[in-house]
Image (cartoon, rainbow, N blue to C red):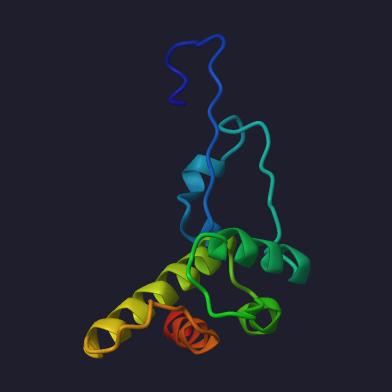
Length: 121
């Protein structure tokens, strides 16, 4: 990218969810031929992202991510994935505090809502 030697057959692809902190020198003409901005996920996309990232988690019976779609407006896909992982960790921590309980670990809607609150801080 410094322009000192010509490279053939080289493709540079970059991605960020923080375009506000990209060095402006990287975006000067001649550096990247195309800059494609993808919007934040809409409601349908956020719902599908929740479905993907809760598929293998022990969520409570009857859990539906529809209720989480509205409270995650403005979240990126990576942030929604993080919410799912934080919710699972909250459930695990809660389980081990009540170690005499023999029920299996279950991630509840409350865990997800607490994880969303933590992400918004």
